[in-house]
Image (cartoon, rainbow, N blue to C red; front, side):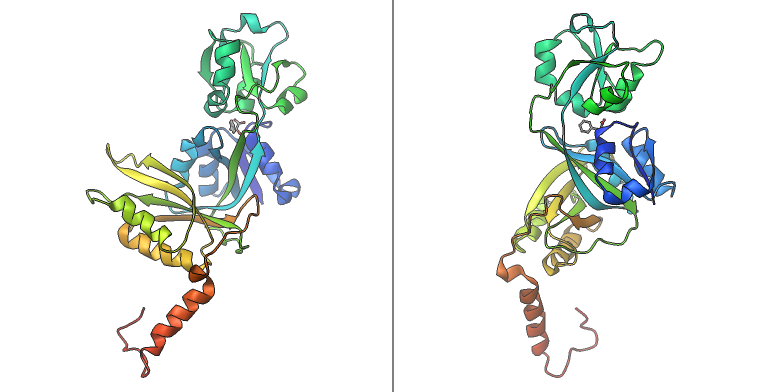
Length: 314
Ligand SMILES: O=C(O)C(=O)Cc1ccccc1
């Protein structure tokens, strides 16, 4: 297996990838961006990509939500949670007082806003390709900024970088959720503690369409753990919903809900069923469990003692 990730070495995404046991004995290479990592998988240059998808402070990583749903080739096979801690680094001669420009990944910047307002209120923010990418930029000949925000490990592997402030995240319990994405993979086995990710275009000019979509979950006792609306890009006002639900496509209630969703929104995308990182089992009301679905199907069959007419398939 060949893995790629939002690089360079030292990003939080690399930490997430290294938490996958198989990675230790496989090849891995950094990509410059989330779309770049996903395209490497689409092109067959990598078998799987680790990318950030959701943060407990900032919400969804829009670059990832949009890029995964671009076509039907990619699916999530695993999720990893990483606790996030940030440090401020700079070259030896720089101190907090003479910082005028700071770079980091936009998601990191969003998570240190209160700290920045207090400690470096006049510093200008320069968006970086990733946290580690911004830090390594400081080692170039004429860096266009004088400090960066990254993981503590980056400073440890680069002694030329000095840690000016530690643990600067506004929320000390911030966690980022990362997903491992592969091309047309086998669906991971159901564990009883699973999630399924969907991208559901909102039908246009249909009053109540969102309610009709959500009803498909509620009538089957399916819990949503994330829902975000994203513009499709087609035109102003055109949206899709990026949704995570508790359950696996091997669960009858989930397949039943997918059929219902497809009737409301035929371009729905299934983006994978995979085990939850926290292994918390899904609570299923008995009327929505496998036995109930089997019994309901069997009962309908008994209504045709002579067998179903041929044109009655479902
Ligand atoms: O840039 C990184 O290190 C990343 O992995 C993206 C990111 C940035 C901030 C919080 C979590 C992930």
